[in-house]
Length: 125
Image 1 (spheres, rainbow, N blue to C red):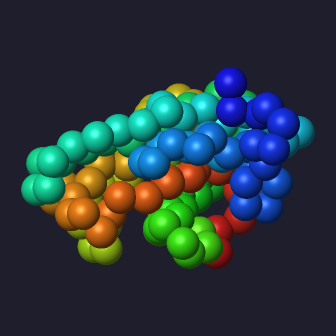
Image 2 (image 1 turned 90 degrees about the horizontal axis):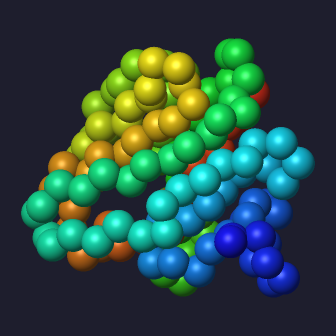
């Protein structure tokens, strides 16, 4: 599990000490689950999946990433459907029932190795 002692991450989110994938969300309700890690070679597309079964109607899904030695930085938010991303190049998509989302990195580079978070949020940034 990701919620053991000392596992608190940014803003109190559950945190897993994996290189490229992490659990993120609100301690009380969000119950966000992400795969422990995803690995690929440079230039080979990779998908990072996130499950958020308790998302509320109208809530956005926010994605962040935390590069080694840095604080988390905002990537994108989405309500439904899919959207193209410019930096890093890829696509963010949400399942029809909004209970899961996926971040596809089209051409990942070594500099994209990071901890990726997603969390439902009541409003967009």
